[in-house]
Length: 458
Image 1 (cartoon, helix red, strand yellow):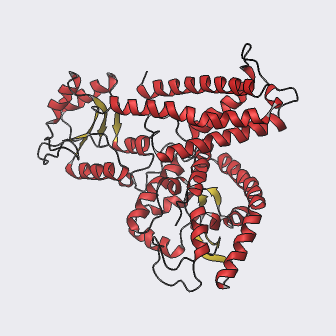
Image 2: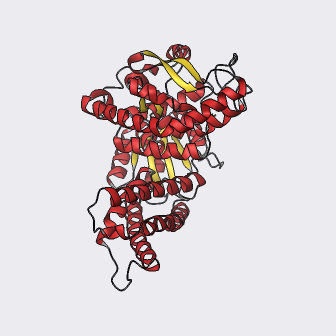
Image 3: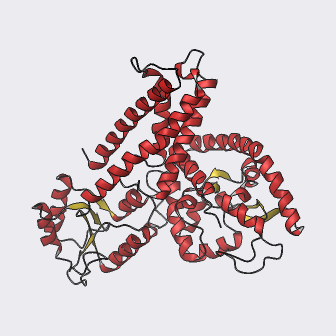
C-alpha cells in the first residue's frame, strides 16, 4: 500500500472517530444524548458530507500543504458547507423522527468544534510526513533543455523536494543535485544502480517522454525499478499528478486524440452541465439581487457613470458574445490592456467589487443565455484572443467548452497580466478540459468561496 493511500485511510478513520466523539459529547452537553449509549447510525449523513467536502479540497491528498493558511481557510469553509448540507438534509429531506432533528444546535456546534480538531491532526500528520520525506529525492532524466524547464517549474510551484537532475545523454552538461545544493549530478546508469541498492531514497523518477536517448541498460534498470514499486512518471503525467495542469510543450494538433475530454466529446455530460448551470444561475441571481442593487447604487453615487460594463469576449467554438459585469473602473479607462496591482483606473467601490468577485455576478445572465457556464476557462477579450492565437500554439483548444465565471485556472493561479501568465493559466485550463468531472467542479466551487472570502481579486 502506498504512503498516500495509507495517509488517506488514516485521515478517514480519524475523521470518523472525531465526528462520532464530538457529536455525542455535544449532544450530551445539550441534554439530548446519553454517553452511556452513544449514537452512531444517525451520524452516517454528517460523516458522508464531511468526507465529501474534505475530499473536494484535497484534504486526503498527501501532497496537500495541510499546514498552510490557504488550506486552513478552505478546510473551515468545507466543514461549514458540510454543516449547511447536513442541516438542509436533516430538516427538509429526512422523515420525522431522525435523531439529529432533536437539535439544530448540536449539528452546528459539532461541525464548528470539528474544524480545529480535524485541522490539528492533519497538520501533525502533514508535518511528520514532510520530515519523513525530507531525504527522499525526485530523479529527473532528460536533456539539458527539458531539465532547465523542469527546474524553473519547480521554483514556480514552490516545490521544496530535492531533485537529482541527470542527463539522458552523456554529452549534456551536468547540473547540480538541486537548486539548493552544489553537489554534482551523476551518470545515469550509476545513479540507477545506487537506487536499486537502496543507497538513495527516492520519491519518484520523472522521465522525459522520449526514451530514444536512453541506453539499453538504463531502460532495463528503469523497468526493474518500476516493477519494484518506485513511482515512475513521464514528464506530462508528473505535471498532471503533482501540479494538476498540462505542460504546454506536449501540445500539438493531435494532442486532443487522447482519453478524457468528456465535457467536450460526450453530449450527456455537456447537457447535465448545462441544466445545472441554468438551475444554479437562477438561484444565484435571486440570492445576489440585493447585493447587485446596493452595488449599482454605490457605483452611480461615486461617479454617475453606467452601472454595467460590457465587453466583447470569445466563447465556445470561438463564438463572440457581450460579457456583463458591474463596472469597477472609471468610464474613461484608456490605458494598458491588463489591470495592474493598485491600478489608478479602478474606482473605490470597484476595488471592493473586484476583491470580493461581486462584479462577476451579472455574468449569471450570460450563463442563462448559454454564452457561458458557471465553471470553465476564463472568457477572454476578443482583442487579446486574436493576439494569443498568433503567439500560442493550440490556444484555441480552450474554446472547446463554454467559458466560466470561475474555473480551475482562476482558483490556482493569480490574475494574469502578461503573456507568460496567460501561458501558465492555459496549462490549468487544459487540465480542466481534459479531466472534467462534476467532482472537480464541486472542488472549484469551494476554492472559489475561499478566494471570494479572502479578497484575492484584482
